[in-house]
Amino acid sequence: MSTIASPSAKTNASPRGMVGRSTGDRVILALTIAAAAIMMAPLVWVVALSLKDNKELMASMNAVFHAPYTLQNYLNILTTSSVFRWILNSLIVSGGVTLGTLVLCSLAGYGFARLNFPFRNALFVIVLIGLAIPEQAVLIARHQLFSWAKLHNTYQGLILPWLSAPFGVFLMTQYFRAIPKELDEAALLDNASRFKIFWKVLLPLTVPAQATLGIFTFLSVWNDYFWPLISGTKKEMFTLTVGIASTQTNFAQSEGLGFLMSQAVFASAPILILYLFFQKYIVTAVSGAAVR
Picture 1 (spheres, rainbow, N blue to C red):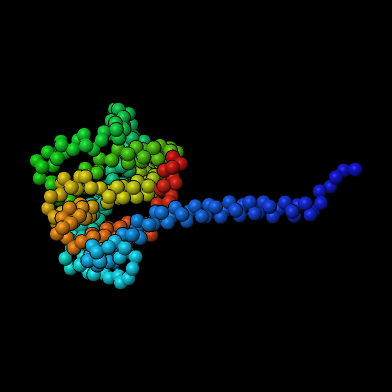
Picture 2 (cartoon, rainbow, N blue to C red):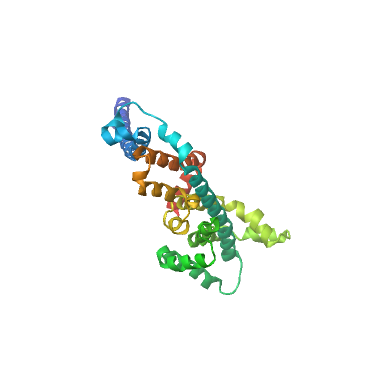
């Protein structure tokens, strides 16, 4: 006689599976919370330090865990610090570089992917070689060139070096190549010009690539310290990274550790705001870059 599995056996197996999955979910959740806590700890520490009086911190670092807390360091920023000027400089430079990079790399990517011209492949290889050249290798020549052109301590001097973006050209070229050429042919049959094909047909299809390139370009320029330190010698032309570093260098003459940390909070605020508004695009950009 054939054996028929009883319903009770199925009902007994089901809870065990649910328990296994539930336990795994709990472990993953616990690890996620632990990782988030580790990543958030430095930010919480910086915010706590920024809310303490410098005299208390000099007496004991344990004061950071106890009340009272004060906003005096932030009031000092509003009245005495140049941090708002530095934030404005960073926004102008980062925004200008991002906009210029998107425009130039989109045009270059379209040209390499769709247009036929002499030495196209050779020029594309030269662009790729630019990825292998470290910034330090051309630093002296760039510094001399910008000094001759009197571009130091100007926004142009801070923006122009970033516009040579071989990675952006490579990314946009590969993205344009992935778009079927039948779209170009259909537009040509409708008597569309090359620019109209680029602007109306192909460019809207590259929004994911532009989002990836724009986000990473903005963050890279915002966090850059090396070139702004060399190019901007006047305090009013400091970017935020250089300005905060100069405050740390003159620590003895500053308002103390709490004041320094309050400036660091101000430095992080624009990036946090950027993430809140564009978090969907940032996650898509990171996951898309990983897949590609």
